[in-house]
Image (tube, rainbow, N blue to C red; front, top):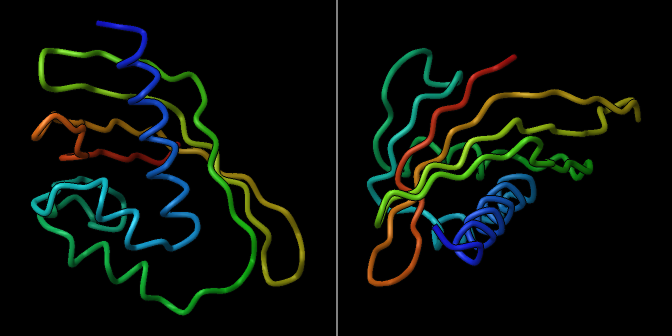
Length: 128
């Protein structure tokens, strides 16, 4: 496992979170495999496959309120052409009344080398 790969995977994971926070569908889809799978609270315990489920949240009416995600306590494990990136995601946001809020969740993201580039292929997100 090279330090370059670890740094690349952390950078890609941050780019992915930034795309989510800014509802940047083009960047999000460029980082994700078309058959992305996930377990996340919004899916209510079901395995979701593909991008349609996620597209809904990008297409929702944007609030224009600032939001940002921070990766805390990251760990990266690389197993050949597959990598596991785990961390606590801290999300800061401003509500409709101008009050700031912070939430946190546990995330595990699996990346796979496809044609020499890391692609996001699966994630699991749990609330804390």
